[in-house]
Every structure is written in structure tokens, then in C-alpha cells.
Length: 295
Image (cartoon, rainbow, N blue to C red; front, side, top):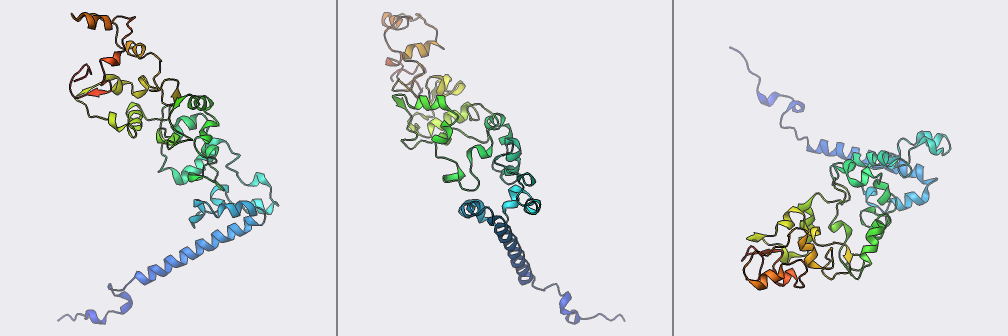
């Protein structure tokens, strides 16, 4: 007969029922304490010379992560310290080429901005540190200045458009540049993914024009709202690209006089003084008539 050892006689240290949670918790506490000590040590070393930067850094979101220290962006500081502060011994993202500084930021932020390297800003050599102040950003998202003042530093022509009599209320109202433009993740020069995103940006506020419509104006789908409207500002109260609405319509709709109604014919000659939208009142879309006339 074979003798089997009772499971009760297996030493406790080999027991599969051993509770590992307290042990793992101790390891986690040890690790966090170690990281915290390293972080504090790095800050203490840097603060001996860079007291103001360390003081401001303690107030920004980056400082809330125990894994982020000065060396996360500036590299190993030992050579810098041993050389009595030789600035060539440690990288400075604020003075580095935009592409190099961006690579450092994207080691953490790549999941948030996966396409930034191909964006209009990046290809124009506008990098993370052009808009963000890593140590002491006073605005949300560590921006160097508030919108739209920050954007106007480069987009001077757009600033002039917002000074026109009719304009969207940015700066002096609730609209921000980033409500319509994506500064990080788009390949288009207007910092919008395409016509669909452009239209979607407009409809966030202009909900009465969202539809859905039985009869859609093809221009909205094919060219977007900016086919007829200038989004930043102008002299026309409706922000039309041209002062005469008929001229805008005739860019797509050639003059015709095919209808038998004399009144209709008169309205469709090139020099007509009758506004197109006097008859085609539902120009953005209609649920009643494909010519967008009043139902």
C-alpha cells in the first residue's frame, strides 16, 4: 500500500491559501516611499540654485505625480552639479529645437496627442514650449497666456478679423479658439480634421441649424459653413464672406430663367435686386421643399 501524506501536514509556508495581499501592500508602500524620497532628493538638490523654479513647480499639475522629477525632462543632473552648474551638461527643453522638446513631452503625452508630430503647428516648428510653460503656467493646461491673446501672438491677421464690427465673442465672450480648432491633433492648416469637424464646431452653438433635414443644402456637406460665412469676423452681420448674398449664391448657382413665371424669371437674372434668400428662406436645410423656399 502506498502512504499518502495528509494535506494538513504540508508546511504553512507552501500553502496555496497564503494571503499575499499584506505582503504586496508592503512592497507597494516601500516603492512609493522610495520614489517619494528620490523626488524630494532631486528637488532639494535643484532648489539650492533654482529656488524660484522649484517653488513654482510645486504649484503645477506635474508636481502632483511622484514619478516626475526635474530629471524627467532635464536628464541626469549629476554632471550638471559636478560641473558647478554648467548648462551644457543638462538639456533645457525651453531652449531646445521644438522637435526635440516635443519628443520629451510626448514620452508621457503621446496617448493624448498621438498625431502632434504631423499637425500644422508641429510642421511650422511650433512646439509644446511655444504655448506651454512647464514650471509656472498661470493658465489652465499650463498655457503661457489666456486665449485668445496666446493665439494672437502668431495669428495677427485673425486678431484683425475679430476687431471687425461683427465677430464671434471670443476674448470678450464665452467662445475660445479651441472650441473650434484643435491645436494638437489635426493635419489640416485650419487645425480642423475636415469639413465634418468644421460643421460640427459651428453646430455646437448654432443648434437651430443642425437638422436633420429631409432636403440638405449640398454646400454644407461639400464645403462646410465657411463656404458662405467667415467665422472670425467681418462687416456683415451674418458674417457672410461677401456683402451681397446673391454674389455668394452665384458662385455655385449660375443664373437661369427657365421658369414660366415672369416674377421668377426677373429674380434670376444676374443684375436682379431681389435677394436670393427672400424666396429661398430655409437656405441651410428644409423638411418641406428641395429649393428651400418658404413652405
